[in-house]
Image 1 (cartoon, rainbow, N blue to C red):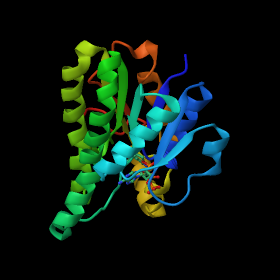
Image 2: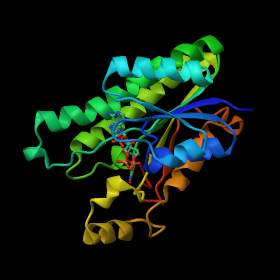
Image 3: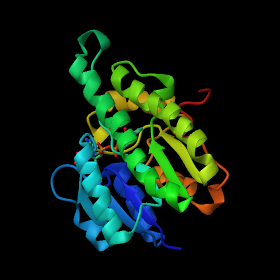
Image 4: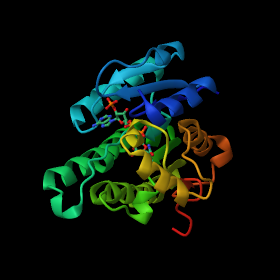
Amino acid sequence: MSRSVLVTGGNRGIGLAIARAFAEAGDKVAVTYRTGEPPEELAKLGCLAVRCDITETEQVERCFKEVEEKQGAVEVLVANAGVTRDQLLLRMSEEDFGSVLETNLTGTFRVVKRATRAMLRARKGRVVLISSVVGLSGSAGQANYAASKAGLVGFARSVARELGSRNITCNVVAPGFVDTDMTKVLTDEQRERIVKQVPLERYAQPAEIASSVRFLASDEAAYITGAVLPVDGGLGMGH
Ligand code: NDP
């Protein structure tokens, strides 16, 4: 059965891998991109690319209208778009803190709120939020990012409680370190230090996050809601 899927931040990294996984399984997939042009691969996969900055409510509204017109109301939402703005606490400006919260947490609120409108009418829907292992473990230099990713857990669990009676599930995937642009900024030394702490002794590939997202959106996961699924090579064990 082909569903209408929307992945935010689907033009690269983990979001692109998620879009690929759903498209290859036969779903109708729309992705949002914020800057530049979407990669050619998306057109080859038959995905719809919609420009949208999730910090702008009007752009979110316009994006959903376009997706609804072209592939039907969103049945599966993957809120993946996210940013980092790392800095030690004493040097972190309110701007650094607020802008990360605005994208990662409030931006997710915006798209989930908009998507669940139609899901409520349809009395079914799947929402998957991309958090991070550091939302649970904390991370020096990432107080803003960790707070935003921890916030997603409370948010998801509240949505799961509110909308469970309408057959809408809301779950969180918490990746560890994944090979994408976001982690390319780390030095070889930092990378080595991280890998030493990961029981599986390597980074994840984006496709390994995508398969968990697809599982949580599948019929097999119909009874899973409010869950946090770590996909982190064992890095966060105990949280
Ligand atoms: P990338 O930096 O490669 O991609 C981030 C994506 O988010 C891009 O598509 C970007 O769009 C989009 N985005 C950023 N800000 C906005 C905005 N305001 N509105 C709309 N889209 C926006 O990141 P990853 O693929 O690595 O990460 C994807 C998600 O996974 C993020 O939420 C991240 O926090 C999380 N994560 C990543 C980990 C990792 O190790 N890489 C580990 C744990 C979690 P554009 O290209 O236009 O800037």
